[in-house]
Each structure stands twice: as structure tokens, then as C-alpha cells.
Length: 72
Image 1 (tube, rainbow, N blue to C red):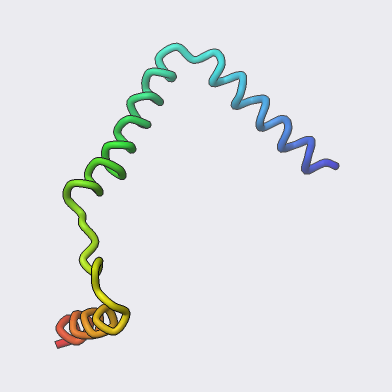
Image 2: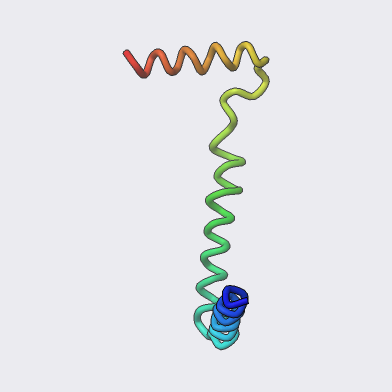
């Protein structure tokens, strides 16, 4: 029961803090937009999956070749 009370107190502390923010909401919005750009937009346009369109055997061979090249 004590753990639930502590978690409830922590939740209320953060909820009141976010509720009373003025610049904080704008900053959180900027952070969320930046994360969206980093993880969604850049992934779509610049980081294409290197192993897409290959069979399981081809994927295994490709990964094995890359590991062997890194060891040499």
C-alpha cells in the first residue's frame, strides 16, 4: 500500500508541475517535433533497410560476410 501511495504522490507532483508550466509546454512541443523528425522523417528518406527484399539465406550470407570483413 505504501508503494501505491508513493507512486500516487509522484504522479500528482508531475501532473501539477506540467499543469502550471508556461514555457515548458512550448519546449516539450519542440522536443516532440524534433524526435518525430529524427525517428520518422530521417528514417523514411535516408535509412533504407539494407536487407529488404532478400531471402533468409541471402540475409544470413550478407551478415556473415560483413562480420568477417570487420574482423580482418
